[in-house]
Image (cartoon, rainbow, N blue to C red; front, side, top):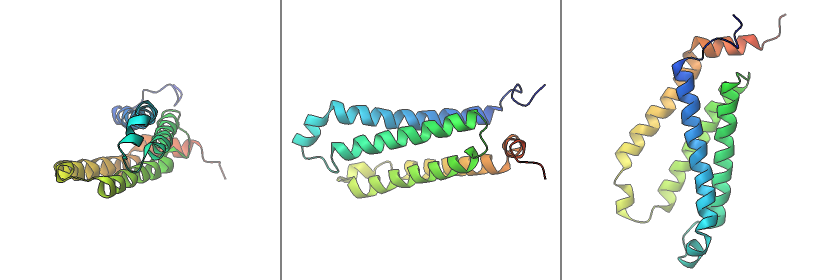
Length: 144
């Protein structure tokens, strides 16, 4: 049985699913920016609808590319996903800290912090330690 026909491990499917969820949130952010554009401008929401639209599109595309690369076993997917998730997480935290205006916005800070650490840990450890990922990398290496 070839390696492409082998069943994908559960945790690889889970990681791909989480990347698709991140992608979906980005695309929904883009959609809502356009859909609510008038209200966002009228209410003077910062950083503004253009920023949220562009950042939504970028995060949606970045996470979708990561999910597709992982699913297709592309040789660069491991490093791409690690960098992508780190950048998306850092951007999310930066927005949270810079643009949250009320104390009520920080009520979920402990949950947000713990879930961020757990997700980053999962992504990095899974991609570093999983034999299926190592086989994926080795499959694409050229013989000497």
